[in-house]
Image 1 (tube, one colour):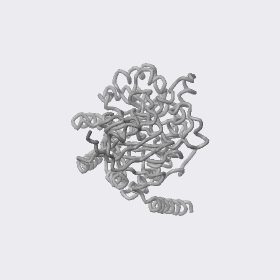
Image 2 (tube, rainbow, N blue to C red):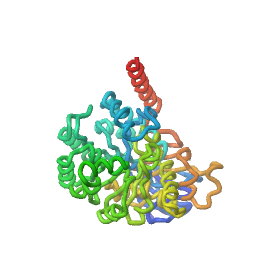
Image 3 (cartoon, rainbow, N blue to C red):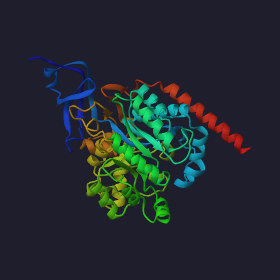
Image 4 (cartoon, rainbow, N blue to C red):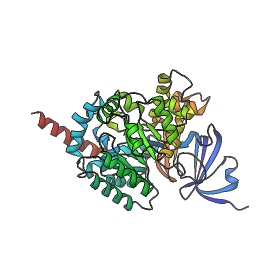
Length: 446
């Protein structure tokens, strides 16, 4: 018999493919060729079937699909801890927006995104959905690291350091998309910031563009009770009703936060096929409210998980996020069976992939999909004994257990060391930004 060639064969103690749901493979191997998954077979069978250029043995590890951070503002890692313990509006209007107006540049975004990517890769995230300015700098940082990214074509009504207004933002964002044509690491979404920062005229225009380009739309919706109350005062209706009227409430919408939802709105999400990105830690920290994910899931809505930016979380740790999501859902719903471990893991992987329009490409360990993989070592006392590996992963393990990460078959984290990132240089640049911001603050206090 002819041996089938592979680039990499990874043997693991456990493999959780996420699809089909509930399956755990013990003592299995996963084969990779040309960046894609080609097979999952019992470890004992693999040597008779495959000739691999490289064999990796992970005896005490669980192998899962790479985690998908469905909503973040990566470059805001440079503002981590700058203005804490404040409500959303105060935090944004008095602290974050002025800091961004002063500091955000192509260089700031490149350095901040590089810092975020170093943190994300080391914690098992292989794809992030970014909503930020200077997406060309995000591409530069992600390409240097080998990280997968979904990039927001960000739109605000007013000027920022990135552009004069909606027309320029759309033109620049679509230019970046053209430059990335044919690079499988990058996909794009239109990203109007929120229904309260983008006028109806431009929301309509974005809907038309999204339809003609076949791209999804990513926006903050119903993040706080204030936002909903203000919309009622201003338009006589809730933001979701406005989005419905504008034609945006479709299966290509990713609605982020969604902490304020009526039963009718939940039913409407299910009917419309809208995806929800749940950011529990950011919502808790800003006291914005809690997205009712148990009710959304029960209605059949696809829920993805995001960290939001590191300035309101204050980390980009998807393993921490999925544990918080599972615990919070139980507390909010009063049901200990709400969002079991399998569901939490699915939200952090396949749910995220589907929300970004990448459900056919990533998010589960299925032959034909990209080999975006995360391995966690469960040998520590904190993760023993392993009765049910998915429970151990969600409720006991953390990012400190992550040892190896692959994106499109390329090993970006090797035995806890970042293989494609010069961490020292990344940290030095972050420290230089901290000094610059601190010096400016000191001089303005005088």
